[in-house]
Amino acid sequence: MPDQSTLLRVEHLRKVYESANGDVEAIGDISFTMRSGELVCIVGPSGCGKTTLLKCLAGLLRPTSGLVEMDGAPVTGPSPAMAVVFQEYGRSLYPWLTVRGNVELPLRHKRLSRPAREKLVTDAIEAVGLAHAARSHPWQLSGGMQQRVAIARAIAYQPEVLIMDEPFAAVDAQTRADLEDLVRELHANRKISVLFVTHDIDESVYLGERVLVLSASPTWVQEDLTVDLPPERDQITTRAMPRFTELRTHVYDQIQRAKRGQTVAP
Amino acid sequence: MTTHTGRIAHRSPGWRLGRRVAGGFLYPLGLPFLLLVIWGLASSSSTNRFFPGPLTIFEAFRETWIGPAFVDDVLPSLYRLALGIAASIVIGIAAGTLIGLFQWLRELLEPLLEFFRAIPPPVLIPVVMLLLGITDTMKVVVIVSGAVWPILLNTIDGVRATDSVMSETADSFQITWWERLRFLVLPAASPRIMTGVRQGLSVALILMVISEMFASSAGLGYRIAYFQRNYLIAEMWSGILLLGLVGVLLAATFGVVERRVLRWYHGIREVNRA
Image 1 (cartoon, helix red, strand yellow):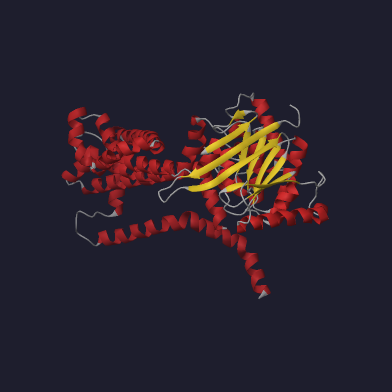
Image 2 (tube, each protein chain N blue to C red):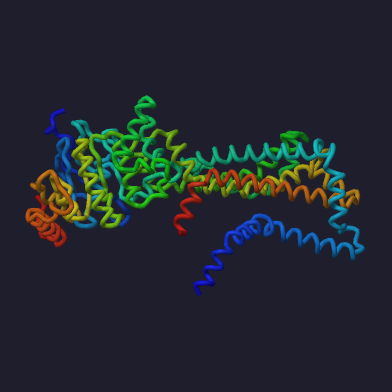
């Protein structure tokens, strides 16, 4: 597959929640495309429907109108081409299974030979640096390690795109930095496409090759920003670059404008 | 201060072992032993023939239950009890899972379940007896008719309460229906299911005895009722003692199984407490 091909195409996506007290328009009109191998961050003011957008993309929610296309085929339900890493790792991993069991579970129905499956699982657990904890249960691990398990489970599934929903919102700052570097590393070494939803502006600029800034609800894409930082990034030097500061200030400013509703829908 | 702590630390291994022995044996057995002594003293100074002393009862226990009565009365009772418990667990979990998973089934069955649950199982004995005769099947049916409810209702609740994020995870990875049942729904409901089984066990034991007290010619319940009617008081008490022991054995077995099945659950609780 050519590297520049379109992987994910979202067109005029709209989601309205119907309720007894009237309809709530969570997503107004979102359109964007993502190429294969990209790392795209989605950032927006709180309550702008980031999680709703992500669930629509992952096929877990049906959009009210609009189109989500993966490799040219419309997404109507969960697809083997996508794997989701949820924010609540504690509720997304199964406590009755070991780390290995959790990573292996989604592979059970894939038609793989046992050795091939074992290899995928071992490989994924090693890739997130948890080889020593494979036989532990998730609740015996720290929050950061649990989220690593969820990441291992997602990459063992061999999706074309990894969808991450504020995955590091619930871990402490130091762990968070390590996990960010892990995502960068997996993206670089394994050529996995990543769609990363976050509310953290610094995180979006540090991680992303592109940052989509969302408006306040009803949501549209307020800005599609290319992050022109070098691909080799590290927590100290990258964050100290003047360009990094410029970009984060710019995104921060956009979000503030979005919050005040000073932007106009296209 | 320092010397004091040092002395304690020096003495502590033996002291801790002593405590563990006390916790393992003396505490659980001490109080029953004390009660036996009090009972013995009280009965030795009493002339009431309905309260024989513990030694008389132990003697009666040995004479009554160790021998052919064990094969003729105790084993058949235990067999029916085991069959009744097994059937209750299988039916309760299977039906409870289906009812918990499908809302339409729940709406369809809820009033009916409430109705049948409210019927005290002993009143069913004459009906079941008419339908099935005085057979082992009838007794097992009576046991199941009572013991299945706590298991069924707890399973329904447990299955319904499956965590939404865990479900979404299963959805997003397109886990198949069976895998979902095996690796998500049932394990997630297992703490509730075990609670139901624990309640079901005591109901089953009660119904085992009651089912044998009606029109029966063998079994633990029949024997106890027989001794009672023939004023064999010490023998009657020995039967009650045996029932109590069966209950303790049942609870101990359950405890072992529960610790294995819910190891993860107790593990999480321990982590959260720490």
